[in-house]
Figure 1 (spheres, rainbow, N blue to C red):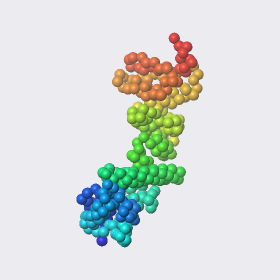
Figure 2: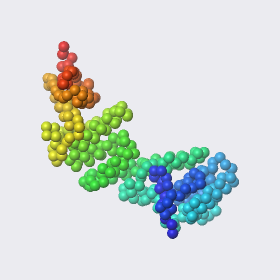
Figure 3: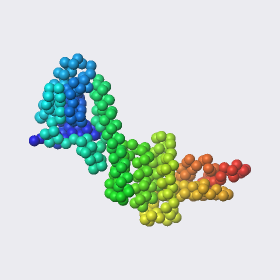
Figure 4: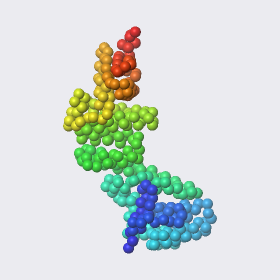
Length: 323
């Protein structure tokens, strides 16, 4: 008996004994996809879905021909007709369907969700069928997100870290701006003693949000980052949690500036100056701008040319009294 493998997540594909099956026209694909998911469906429903603008007799004839063409291409009856008015999936075949595997054991089969349901598939002139595709896409996407979030949270709580990052990456590949998934990634790095990765990842994510959406990470995300700052020993470049080295370009210096600004904001007694030294073109001004990003309401800053950037930080009340 031949093996039939049907992949409906991501770009859809039907394989027979490991080889792709190519069908003559898209409505045969649409027919098979609908029966694979629905299992049992009436002829009238399918004819109306696939040929909504045809007369009933023409639609039924088109349906009979599509079933015949599917059998011819597959070399077997994937669709049975136990009654004249019904069509059903032939469950006696050696058939593997990714959507069924996922629904039977979602958390064990998260890897099967390689993209949205029937990604890129479109059926011209069949509006109701398109509505069905959209409904199923939303259902499976919500199911995947819910199960994946739960799996990650359970694994973090139980300190099972082997697959945590992989599953978080699944979430972020589907939505790179998903801050909830990003916070789980930061939590994973913190719990495994990698505060340097928390800081590095936070800067990269903040840069993405600022560049693409014009927004900053929300307060909850920033608090995770600030906890990582408190754990870092910037003089030695090591983390207090497990002494992991922290050398990621300018992240160390920017994080040290952030920590100093945070401490000053919380205890603004008098004024404070920070001197950033370096050769021309070494990135002093960029570093200062990055550290002050979003902090203008709390500090004034001044710059001198040459090999130094000098920033004076004053509470607004004190700064207003300066000449």
